[in-house]
Image (cartoon, rainbow, N blue to C red; front, side, top):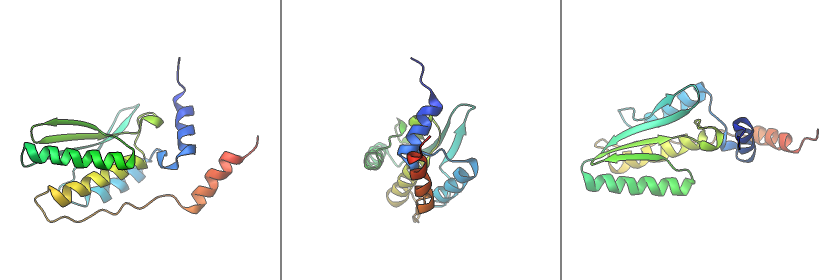
Length: 155
């Protein structure tokens, strides 16, 4: 059975506006906010012609701190109901975020989880004094009304 990815993406976006694929400019603005938390930028975008994902690599003090951080990442992703791909080796953690429901593209949900992960790392694991990114919703009442109109219009 062949799945119509644009149809799936449009349906997901209509049901959950936070699943809207971010434009390049919106994504760069989100990354600037996320990466402003620490002196070193951790998050980048990795794109192919078909997919896009956010990626970050963190190095922890030791193996025990690595697993504490992984548990914090798991708690954040569980709370947001959005789950990353995680690869870990001793004290290094690589994280990738993409939204499968919209064809493996980057959405607001990905940047929201990246913000949560960055803030956890900054507050508990980084060797510098942390500051915090504030992730504000991008959706206004006008956007909500537009979505409602699209969902309720009759052909």
